[in-house]
Image 1 (cartoon, rainbow, N blue to C red):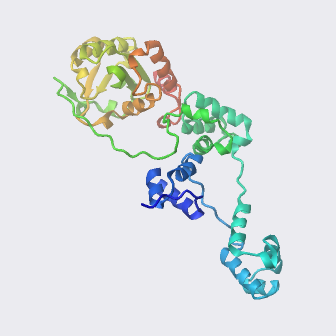
Image 2 (cartoon, helix red, strand yellow; image 1 turned 60 degrees about the horizontal axis):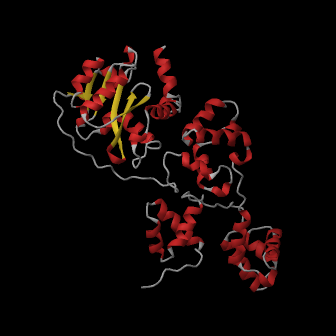
Image 3 (cartoon, rainbow, N blue to C red; image 1 turned 180 degrees about the horizontal axis):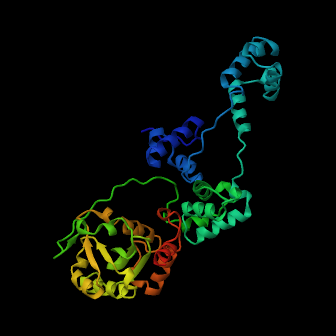
Length: 383
């Protein structure tokens, strides 16, 4: 079998690498497809954090490779600069400078001159984050608070409505993090992103739904009143469990109107333990915030009648294999994985630590709330 080549990737091969990477191929597949060494492809992609470079464009006024080949043939034929210029419809001075810049009459080579022209035309602008210390400090500060780039970008719009120079897009923040050559944001800030991947790449893997058992006397979500469905009033919650190592669990509760989240420490997953812990947490809320609870078909809520008796809250159950029916909770669980990873033993977290985590999420702006925070939205609803 022919060994993979390890020489430098050509410009055409670089473009092919990025095309295949955007199409979803793995780095190993790309290297195999190009018959190149895997490290060459990996180094190219990782150097830019998975962010493909923008396609280079040249002005219609500049000389093309075809023009330069015409110049080269004219020089070999002994034509004057004036003759070549007339044939190309260019000023004589353009041809004179072109030839003088690239080796003169004897040393001019069209391909080499075109490559040098591309290199000279590269004048990358310093990004706004690198130019403004104040803006860079604000972005870095919010990243350390675990805000997403999109949240930061939208917050900057609200904070600086009349200072466009103090605003930046979420894409610029991502690029500054993943492309360290920009020198604007330190790589250590990437650890505050919810996703810990080192390359920017979409993930489209489908989640396999799991079956659930039967819940006695369960009230279907289809019977839930319309005012709960349209999130018109606060006090209606979605709930679930997230699991960790060693069969450890934490209860998650999300208020549908404001997306306000509460976390509940659990000693186990059995229904008596879960119902007792959830009821104790809910009874601490004012009556106006104890409307209803929507849960999935997990056996941990088998004793839902006891929860209703203790809290006076109706419990509605989603249809089997329909996590989207409690979408606010599902989305929040994804956000919580930044703090409660799957491989962590969740039993080691105290209720105080869980409260600190929920407070962080409640003080982060959310796109679905027009970039207001859940804490602000809930306080506003209770006024």
